[in-house]
Image 1 (tube, rainbow, N blue to C red):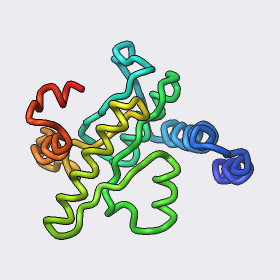
Image 2: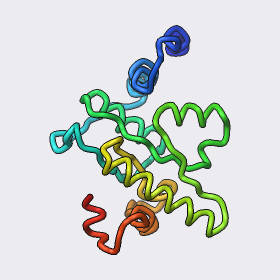
Image 3: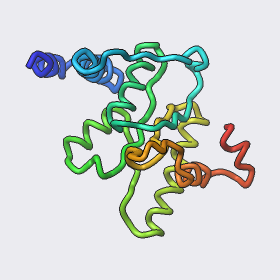
Length: 177
């Protein structure tokens, strides 16, 4: 109830993505953290140069909250937040789509024919590469579709292949870039 009233009172002050993250997303995530997380910690931020952009590939237990908490920790450490790759299955309603997009999310298409999915994968690979190499934004993407129910949290080869679609035959150099 308190959070709802806060959001309604604050919404007119939101003029940018930064404002949305600072005034809406951050308090919302901190409220969830206060009631459901006993400890949230981060390490390794000293290895991140705030001027550079990164591709964060990770497992997830909750695709929305895991990426949101990464962004919260980046935000609170004055590092620009990442764009979040979200499967089109999570954007079934216009409200959810708007909330994801205003919080720097983009769609990973999962349905369609082989040619359509391949074309989308090529475009996605190009988009991610341009964001990072042109220092526009970092990107967070799950290393596999869905949660690993068998404890196998290894990165799916398909994800690495998709990322490499935009690269040359020198994949090692491409991935390093």
